[in-house]
Length: 192
Image (cartoon, rainbow, N blue to C red):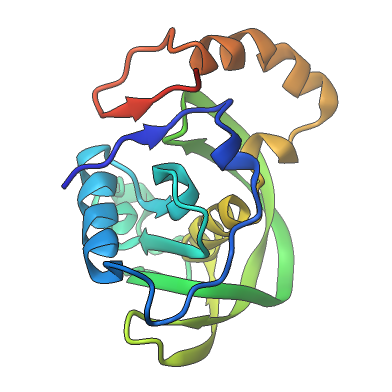
């Protein structure tokens, strides 16, 4: 089932998410719905707070980025061909590598894209869908998508990485989004 994605201005996007255990109700269905919602809105990642769930869960499919790459961009990133994976109760253990800039957007903040600086490598401790614990290191585009989604479960948004002046310049567009004055081709829920 395609779930509505909560828009900028919703309190759900600013809360720090809670850990869950294997008894979390209908977790398999929620994860399936999140995949369906993400693909229906042409995303490469989606975090539970974006579908109004205050839990430490996000899904990432960086394979799509590589499948849709321009020919001249092929072989540029070390994480090719990417991953498709759900992350439960993720915690960052280390950020490494040099910082690099990439143009990011967010399904909860449609029509706004900005250059964001992030580390090139992240080491995460997390559980998979069967609640098996893993410690894995990710790099390149995959690390960036993971860090973007991880921010969501910490109550942060990609625009929080911008300089204050840049955020101030976006204020009008952000207010329009929070008021529902934005056209998107996917299901959204706007703050009241």
